[in-house]
Length: 172
Picture 1: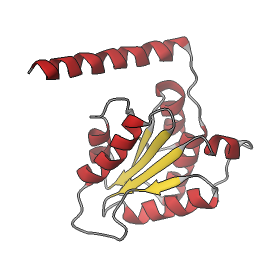
Picture 2 (picture 1 turned 180 degrees about the vertical axis):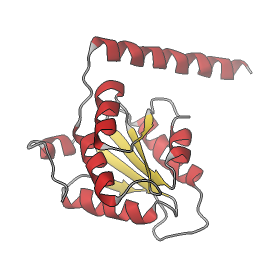
Picture 3 (picture 1 turned 90 degrees about the horizontal axis):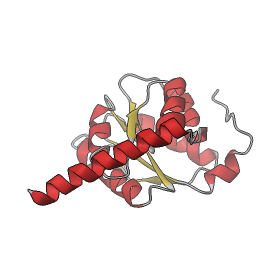
Picture 4 (picture 1 turned 90 degrees about the vertical axis):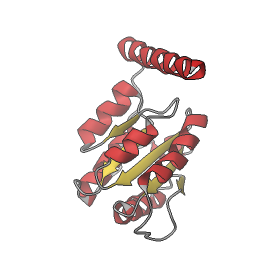
């Protein structure tokens, strides 16, 4: 059984909205994650197809979530699930203000939030079991960004890179 580790999780939950998305390979795991989160009063918006759709494609689903997080990056988070997790992660990272990471363990998810302020967690349904996925989700949702100077400095460097790429794109 996966337990919520933080006793003040309810207060933290009310300030965020979690967009949840999966393609056909991640659909079953997404349904389990959604049930787990809604039972714990996390506000979830499922942006996937409403039923298992074998011909859906991960780029469109990741796009829907990344657009939401990109606009409301202070409050919104997303959990995206596909077979490898990589496709969703690649698409999400195309958007400004989005920092997506592939999560394979609770420790890795903890680091991604604490050090990199990741706001999109991508899971690989073909490579992670339900128990580990739920532990990873809990760790990711309950870990705040540390705010340490070195981590803030690195995030500013990322923002600068994003701005440079956007400027080059305008000139093309």
